[in-house]
Image 1 (cartoon, rainbow, N blue to C red):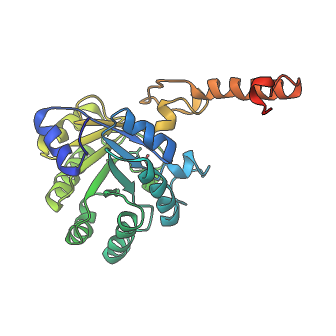
Image 2 (cartoon, rainbow, N blue to C red):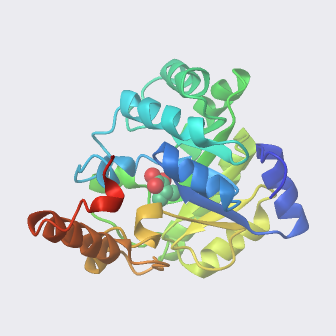
Image 3 (spheres, helix red, strand yellow):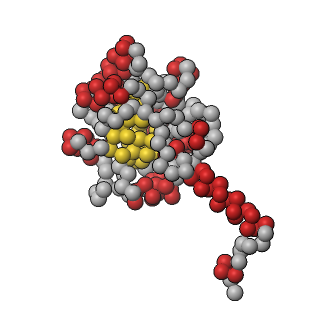
Length: 268
Ligand code: KIV
C-alpha cells in the first residue's frame, strides 16, 4: 500500500477484484504497526469493550470509550482508512443523536468513517448522517449489539427466510448510501450472493471466502487470549499469550534471583 486509503479506494478495490484487509485496532502502537504492514482498514471496534475493558459484551461501551481509543489509533495512523464503531444506543433512538455522536468520532477522534449495526430500519438515520458528510459502514448477520435478542453468538441466515431478510437489509443499506458492509457469521453461500448483488464491498468475519475483504479482531488473530476462547472462524497467526506469559515469568524469575538488571542495564 502506498497512498492513503479512503472510502473511494475500497470501491475501486472491489471493482478491480483486489481483496480488502481490515483488522481491529485500539491503541497507538498497533496502529503504527498495522500501517507499516499495509492493512487497508483499521476498525476501532466496540469489541474493545471485551478485549480492552474486560466487559462481558459490547453493550456497556460508551461514546467516551470509543473517542478515547479512536484518538489513540488516529495518532499512529497515516495510510489506512480509520473506521470507528458507533456504540450501543448512540444511534438507534434518534437520527440527530447519530449525527452528533458520529460527528464527535470524526471531529474530535479523527475517524474517517463510522460503522453501525442494523438493516432496513437504519436507512433514514443513514440518510441523515450522509447529509452531514459522515461515511458509513454497515454491519449485518451476527450483530453483537443485538446479542440478547439473537439469544447468543450464533450463525445468522441459515433458514431461507432469515437469509432473504439479510439480503433485503443489505440492498436497503446500499440504497441508503453506505460505502461498505461487514457480514458477520453468515453462511458462505449467503455472503457470496450478497457480495455479488452489491456494488459496494462486503467485508466478512466468519462469512467465508467470497466477501470482498476480511476482518478479524486483532487480539484473536495474534493469539493474545488462551486458545479455547476464540471462535471457529478465527485463525491464530501467532500465539502471543504464551509468548508473553513466558517472557513475564522469565522477568519475574530473573528479578527474584537478582540476574536482572545486570551490568549492561545499569548506568556508571
Ligand atoms: O467490534 C468489532 O470488533 C467488530 C468486528 C468484529 C467487525 O465489529
